[in-house]
Amino acid sequence: MANVTSEFLLIGFPGIQKVKLLVFLTILVTYILTLLGNFTIIFLVWKDYRLHNPMYWLLCNLSFSGLCFTSTIVPKMMANIITENKGISFMGCIIQIYFYFHLGACDYILVAVMAFDRYVAICNPLRYSVIMSDWLTLILAVGTWTAAFLTVFPPVIFLCHLPFCGPNVIDHYFCDIAPVLNLACKDTTFLEQLSFASIGIIVLSSLLLTSVSYLYIITTILHIPTATGRKKAFSTCVAHITLASIFYGCSIFMYLLPQNIHSSGFYKAVALLHTVVTPLLNPFIYTLRNEKVKEVLRDTLKHLISFPKSKN
Image (cartoon, rainbow, N blue to C red; front, top):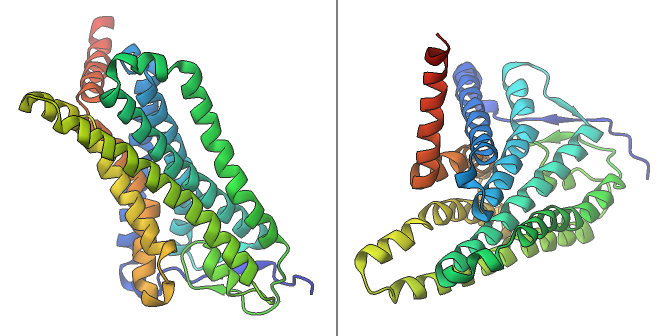
């Protein structure tokens, strides 16, 4: 059966017509802050030698992934809110699905890799520089992007070859795979199972590795004899734990629980948290919770402020 659908229509948020300008401005400000925050993290890690270690290189990867992830969804969503044109081309929809899941998969793998990094730092501090070498960090970073590609690419290829010949209205604000599959003119059971398995493998394996790492971390921290030592060790993990909790919580609600138990509005709200708010929280959580990042940021701001004065 041939594909006769050249365009999909994204319903988005139909109940916000009276406040759409306010919603648009809120999302715009959030998007700008997300870009500034993540670019700041990348700049600080690149610029300052104090952040030249595996933890911050991995954080740099997470910030870059977050930038691309939110830019895959938010600009088109803002255009749909403020204009009457709700359309997205068939190929544009496929590309959005691919990058949404590829970059999302990268985020979850990076969360697990960063948990392993914290495990080595706290449980094997004397061997940290040996275990987390520059070579291993590079392998972990490249492996993250490669694993995400290998997991996401097959379902997207199958999706490209599905026939779409009926309704073309997507009850969402972006091209998510579940509402798109509902429009196919062919049985999609295999692709639904493949997509569910791909998402499940990424999220659950990442959650398992993160949980095991923190089980060892907590056990080690509890054996530290002084309260000051325990507090210092735990403080290095707080930002990562906060971020991981948001990531896994959103994914379990969106993809790993039966979607028929959620209302469409609730599903969109969780998706909005995942696509708009989470990429914003990443740099701010790490900046506010990490003393070294705060120190580097303060020094950088002082240098930028004093530089024009020194020229005069």
